[in-house]
Length: 395
Image (tube, rainbow, N blue to C red; front, top):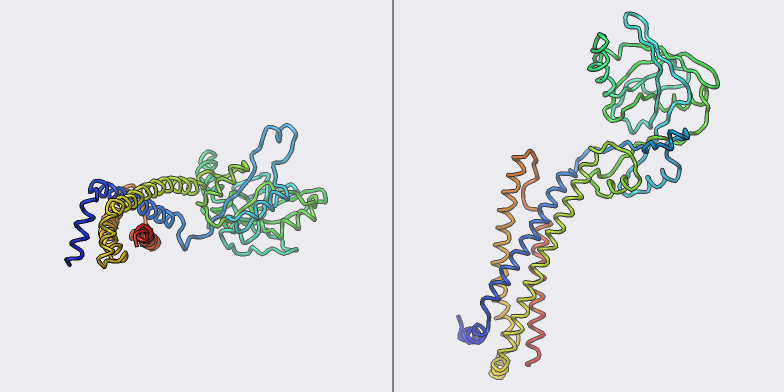
């Protein structure tokens, strides 16, 4: 150590409160650790909930049927303004409507298994289907109507209705060989068709027919008027977006609540991590204030010595560099300890979550590293400016 630095050390160390410096360092370390840990955990959970190669997510929305709908025979459907509002939401990619049949459909099946029942049909745009069934392109004049059935309906038949009635259970491949006769009756007449089940949908719980057939049948057999949809299918950008759950709850739209669990979890994580991050920022702010106040007190108490040093040939830059070197020593140690604290806490948390069956992506996030370096640079710059302003008064 040079003689010049020994003189500066004797002057300033005698006026420094070690207790204040240590407490400020602990506060700065704690705040820095909490802030980086909350940011790291938030980004890891966000990557889990929103993988880069995630398949498109679809939600089926409907309105809740109220007592008023029952008493006054009114429909719980979506108006044009509501559809436009839904399409305009930032978390929505596209919206498709369910078109319902405006005619009566009666199905009958002969042979060993006699089955007669009344049916309903719905249609959605082809791009919203989760399968690409063969023969789905229906054209006017075709006498065979392709049908996509909900997988849930087949399961209900096999494990509920068939067992209770002593009927044979059927596999998806077997169903495709069965031809069902249909009688469609409406205001404009009656027509006979054959129908074949060409696929099963995991996404849509309904009996689906091609949109082209539904439009033709409603115009040719049914009432032929445009009805507002009672259900819509929505492709969302991010099912865990907290704004999605908030919008659906505000509009009182009905949906399978399990589909919104990711959204609610993301909102909860965002709140918790924000609180932890805010506490970390608060600790850091208080600790920085203590460091700045300590510099002010040290320089104020050493006013006479500083003026003498300046007269002896020392410059404000020399004194500033000496004090900042000490601060940089503390800052480097705090950064290393904070990094170790975040790594250890993250390691044990990942191990705990893994034991619970939740696998979070491992490894430090680049954004966390950049944020940490930016904060260190900001703290150093703040103290540099403060010292320069204080020492400039004595020049």
